Each structure stands twice: as structure tokens, then as C-alpha cells.
Image 1: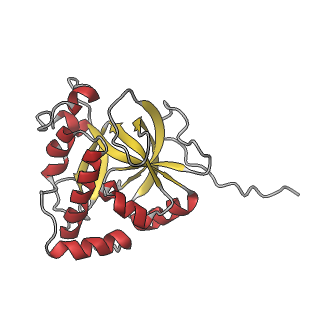
Image 2: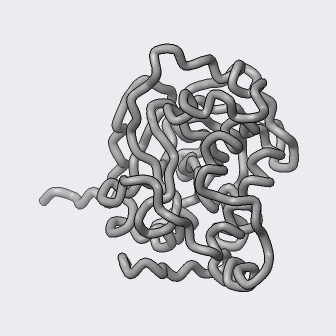
Image 3: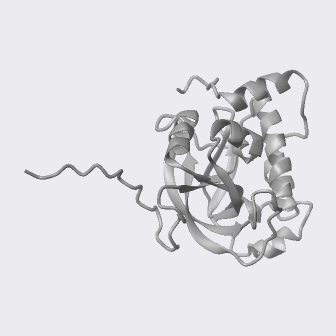
Length: 231
């Protein structure tokens, strides 16, 4: 009689040009590009997670989709795109067209219990599906330090993507604007290029904070409830 294999089946990488994604075999490297840029929200939702650095995902574009939340989708790279270092030195987003070919985010390690909780928050598999994608990783020396764009390594990372609602140019939900602005502040502090923020994220996320959306944003940060009706 054959013994049952109780090991959890690992996600297969969508692409395989990178090194192992995990330092601890029980933890997953997670690439956050939306409101989970907000470090406080991640501490509330995934208390055992750890911020470990900044990352860049090439070949994708950032958007607000029909649900009113952040999403990414594959893009066609520009043949004249500048290097990540050049983009980091352009603070006003002049090259936002080229920056449509990449997504920047923060990276966290997730133990299994936090990954399961994040799956529930993200509405897997209805709202988002889980992908493993190679990202350029800029590690932080400590959770409290600011990441500088020193030479990166390539790591496979968990990315949540909504393939069904991948059309841009929708209006973000009011409370989501509040959470995104808090996340943008943390992302800039951790080394995400200002040019990317101004040229890409600010197309959808105005510089507004507080007001009627503040209390709702804090509630959603603690325990997310989907308001789009998808799940």
C-alpha cells in the first residue's frame, strides 16, 4: 500500500530564470504592489510577515481595475527603456511611458499561516490568482532600514494577479486611495523610485488622505471586506 504524500504542492514558476525564492523553506517571498505597500497594514493582516526589501517586476504594467483596486498585467516592453538606475534618478516621472513596462513593490517573507490569510484577503482564486514570477530584488539590511538601489539579485516571488479584470483606467475606491497613499509613503521611504510613483501610481491615486475615507481605510486594513461584489 502506497503512503500518502502529505507535502504541500508548490506553485510552478511561470518563468524559470532566477534563483530560489526562499531562504527559509517554510517561507514565501511575496511581492506587494498595491495597498500592501503600507507596512502597518501588512503587520495587521500578516503579523508574522517580515519586510525584507524592494523589488522590480519587468514586463508588467500597474493599473486600477474594474473592482477599484490595484492590479497588474503583462505589457509590451519599450525598445528604448532606460535602466532601473537611470529611472531611479528621474524624480518627476518624465519617463512614465517606459515605466509602464515595470512594476515596483515591497517584498515580505510569509510563513504558511500568513500566506493562507493573505489568500483569503485577496479572494483567491476568484478575485486574484497566485503566480510565481522572477523579480529584481534589492534586499534591505534590516526591516527598519531604507533600501538603496544597489546591484540586485533575481528571485522568484509570489505575485497576486487578476487576469479576468485586467483593463485599466478605472477609479479607485475612496478608502483605497487613503490606504494607497500610506503605502506610497512607505514605498518611497524604502527605495521605490519617485519617478515611478509620480509617473505611474499618481495617474490613479491622487494626493488625498484623511477625511471620510480614513476610518473606513483603517477598518479595511485590519480586516478587508470586498466591496466590488466579486467575492
